[in-house]
Length: 359
Image (cartoon, rainbow, N blue to C red; front, side):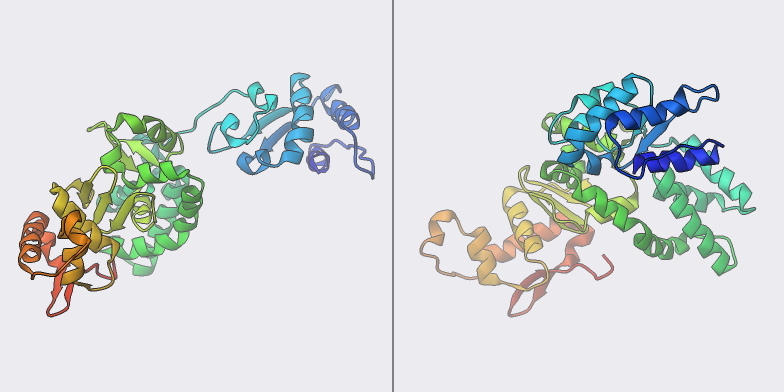
């Protein structure tokens, strides 16, 4: 298959390769390619291997193809260029000497100047402009990722053309909804290829980014361009607000999420709109129970028994009334401030955590 691809490309370069009608051996393969590389009109053969994770986990390829490619590369018959999200040694279940012939190059996110340059280049070709405020919003949604920058800009330009007037801040709600259909399949691919520990660190990023224990996972997430360093604070941010919103809708190990709340169970740490929410252990447990059972009304007795009652009382539990429950609700609402109305009392039934459908 590779030889056929090389031959088709060689024809476009004015060269013809005679390919046998049967599968070729390694020696045949090398001899045919040498016809390109050793001639007076030398052509360099470069094999571009994308999505290398998929290839490297195929044991048949690992044991048969890779030793041949390694030998061809060392003899300067071919040059191999691979693309992968992780280092080649991490891609394969079994380490192969094939991987140690490569020089790794990490491709990171664009900085603001590069992102603006990309936008200006394509906008000039389209003979279009965005208002400065709209352009800033587009750059934020693109997050410095060249692919997502172009997806966001294309959707924004289409919206501006349909609207017939320059984009305004109020138009970004429509833009966000449009973009979800374009980018979420990519986000889902990234998420599913993370380990459970990486998913945990990513979902709980505001709480985990300063922990020494998670330094390795943070480095991996940064190398994957899923998070980026904030120049002013030195902390990490999500790739884009679109990606942050995607992460908030995922099930992550040991993290309870119901926007705008994020509860990191191992750390007993609560976040409200990505900012620390100081809660006592009792209030943390109470809010966690409501988040875990969101979507239904939890009875007063269940909340008192499962959250507030000391362990020694639960063996022979007897409901004694709402006093400590009401006291806890008052404290929690005080801690939530402007978000206190999310704790809703269904009179005569119990309490529920209300998350509006749009969130």
